[in-house]
Image 1 (cartoon, rainbow, N blue to C red):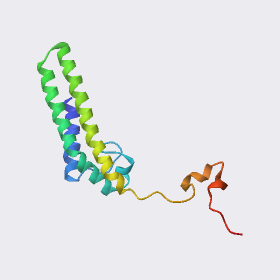
Image 2 (spheres, rainbow, N blue to C red; image 1 turned 180 degrees about the horizontal axis):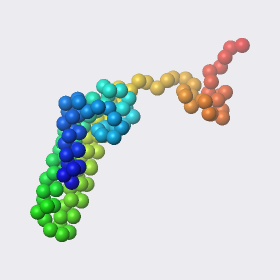
Image 3 (cartoon, helix red, strand yellow; image 1 turned 180 degrees about the vertical axis):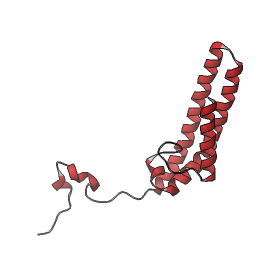
Image 4 (cartoon, one colour; image 1 turned 45 degrees about the vertical axis):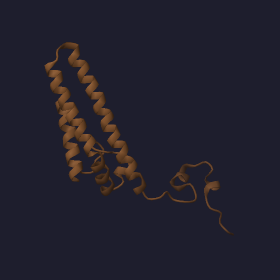
Length: 130
């Protein structure tokens, strides 16, 4: 739990400072967030407080689990881990919703890039005048 707490806190602090490099593993990794460095920075700044909070929850849960014995320690660890995951998810969801409007609009007309393997490609293509 302490290792997970350290990762969550470090990710949150780096995200808050705008220093977390764009990557597909740590931080908010939705398609919208990974679209550009700016989107990634914005998304992770938004999610940073919940990441740090989840890290502190994991750290506190680890301390309590160390003091508790037997099944109580396991139960505390599981409950705290579940709460931390939901906390991280809430922050990631808020961040994803915030950067979604920053994506460029989808192309209008035709099938976009899907026509390459489409069996009804002729139907999707714009009509040509002869």
